[in-house]
Length: 189
Length: 380
Image (cartoon, rainbow over all chains, first blue to last red; front, side, top):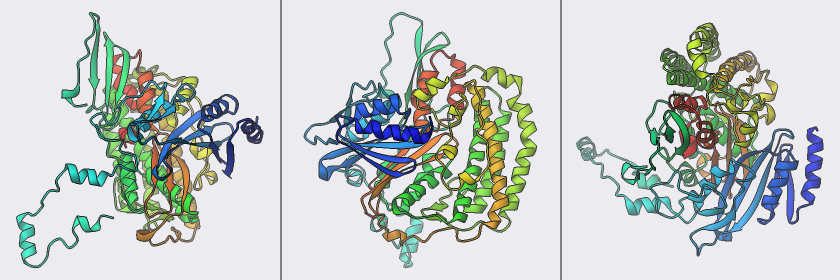
């Protein structure tokens, strides 16, 4: 089966799923917007019937103004040589500690790593994933740090003190009218 | 994990015990721990423990200008930093519809392949050292250093170059650089026999590496293995060929393959790949002087640059495998989100945990190095 046949097949396949919007961005990039309830079924079809066997990554984007998280599943087909990015949005659930979604670990094994990463960094609990535990941030007890409402700079200012750096040689230069022209706090953007 | 937080596992009376490899261990490029459960000298299970190199790069990038992030991205993978700069630049160019001039593209590919050579030389030495052979590691590091000299001449930096920017590269190559690159390639080719005799066909090494850490084709696809590790399983997939970027579709090169899927196959694929990179660099030396024009497309004032709203998923083939950046812009002066997908996030975690089972304790370091994992790509 050549690439064109797979692409035609993919189009007919995608028509079967409700609430789906397909955008062809270029020859090898397809964007699919899909409802959160249909996404696991879509991935199962993509892997089982359309040769998208490689899950390249799962990316998460926080949209606090919309009260939503966007999850993007990037699937690559070695046969059709095309990358399909499936975008879906889930509610942010700011009242609870975790937002919730379903794991796709049983479809794509690499999902285990990315879901655990998103669990730590964004606080999205993936139900039925075997890896819902701390991995990188084992010493961290604060809020999920990659969320937009976590201000890393404010946290640093509250938690740590800026070191006073004024050695003798710098004092001598300052007395002669030189010294640090631009202080770090003035250049922070 | 800090020692005070470690709780010893209370095992029932059995022969099983637990042992830590890392976070400082010569078997891996960087700080990374691997907890093993053993019965005698056989591994029952392994658990990767990352986070020692976590510096929050993705969060830092959200707080800095598009151009400032170029100083951050190469630090995500120290042995092979050029693909990081290139893929970040590619993603910004894709969002803002900037076309890189042809000469800039050729110079980028030159750096990418030189970086691949340097990274593979480093890996040969490290892999050999895990089997007790130290001479190749001295040779590998010494020959890599000559490539770093070329990088220093080209970019001003030996390890972190910060030479690629969105739109192209910072400046043109210096006079006579291609000649010196040619001499380096001549030197590498003259070393081929020495390396083969010392390492790749040396029975001391071959007997230690054959049959260690075997991954078959089905497992490789299931676990998301990419790059040289995938090609060592007999699957001819390479982002440079399948999803071409820059001018790779104009270059003539082969994709080295091995079938066995073990540690020996992986290092042999890297050996062949190194000489394919030499072949690509020779084509660049021949062709680059005839490509005229600027090396950089004009970009807006980088200190007041609002990249238009949009998203892109850019992929390149680094020396470790598929490297991808998912970049989102909301039209502001800083990235809204950058997600780094390093190849080692698969190789160093799930693949390693699965492959190590059933291995013997003395082979674990070799398995780790043969997968060529780069821990900062996991931690970011």
